[in-house]
Image 1: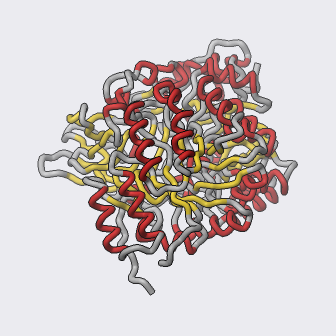
Image 2: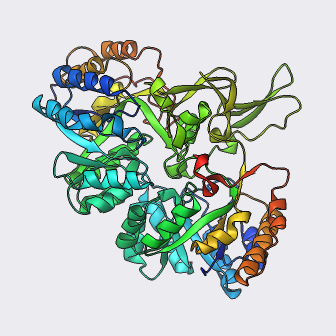
Image 3: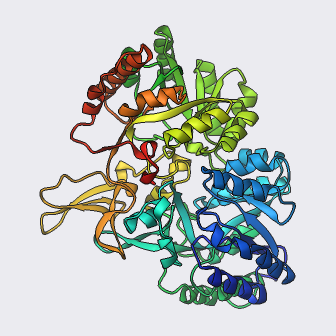
Length: 308
Length: 332
């Protein structure tokens, strides 16, 4: 692949309850070292966590922008309580940074002012994307479970409307959200009395089947895939199909190095086979999967077809 | 006093007639394809069957609501549009939708037909609901099963449309329309294919010690001792081990049914317009029993009489039941 300057590498919002210190260190390194173009910030999963890191947000934005990154604020996936409605409205009122909407409450608050459509918005098809574009959407992140033909058809429609099109290419896939906090439940608490036990699991709380097979990860109200999505071998086809932005989801691994692997592939540096092996090493114990993309069970790993 | 309509499941033409005869104010059903969220083998309607069903229901004053409440993947939108065209031609009383593209199509093409917002759209705030009301003229929202009664009462004050809530049946744990658990394990999507923990992927495996594993696509969702009754392997009702729960526990929820019988008067008082009974996959006799019991209870409450709640409680006798989030925030 030739050097690709059109495709943007993005870093999605941190899904987990990382401490304020951990977040500061993480974003300082991202600003200084990670070859990503755009960074999504903000609490997407649990409104109870936001007070822990909200105060740092202006400095983090400033730091990342100074490093040449474009910053986007993502909103909550679930909006029910007063504080969640207010958090969504507060971001909707900001002129900058850009806003990524993850709940229809955000669409309502934003009106026709420009915004991005987040992966929780269920933009599965051309008709929905056209509707959203007519309401001010400039960019759409497709749901993680979409298979390749649907991604291609959606991307074609979005690009024709002048929208950016984003697909998650790395990290655990969000599989479900709930009103109930499963982290609290595991510790015998309720959501209102959760004691923030989710902070113990910076890469999610592992669930294993009763015959001891890893299956899912719990992150507060969210359920995630046990495996990390890895679409590195599919990057060329994603780009050929019209995808403009590739999203890396922050996991408790060396995300600077992960970003570098994807950047090297985009820049056409080195054989992709070596990049695949390097990514597997960086991902530690996590299995890698691309089943959703290939239209099969999401946890599966489908070997790349030989190049034509 | 709200209308307190009773919205009843019709998985088959026979179940539809049963629900109508048992006193449903409206029945809801779907076509035999991915356009609805109960795309199960042996369920749902052909266009001809729906035509007969509409005639049967309308002759008895019952409304027919057509569920088009899945999310078409790009490239397949026409299947949903054709389903909407067919439903409109056959004279259904409302479409139940989730996808914005589908909602926009119906709002433009069939402005005379009511749109109901499916629980699959996961609209759980006044702002989200107003978005659909203002843009697609949605007349009713089916609320996610995650709100308490005080919260429902508050939402009612802040939205311009009717509210429908589930009162009985399967107790969905995840926010509907945002769940890919089934696709992760089986390759079939709840949102795009209308499939949830499909029977085709279920296996019950007897282990050497006499215990039984109920499996979905080869994953053990739960394991039962020789004396226990093996349950269906629904992913969000399975037992798993976690670092603090090595013994295995219901990580999400126990296999349990929603039964809001006791809360019916309070829900009516809170301004809920319609009560939905889940169970398009259920038998005729089940539908008959549940619809009759709720019909009597709703009529009693509307007439100012004490409802015979005991009959409704008895419907789930022997099974665990819950009032879920409706009763208390502690459920969360």
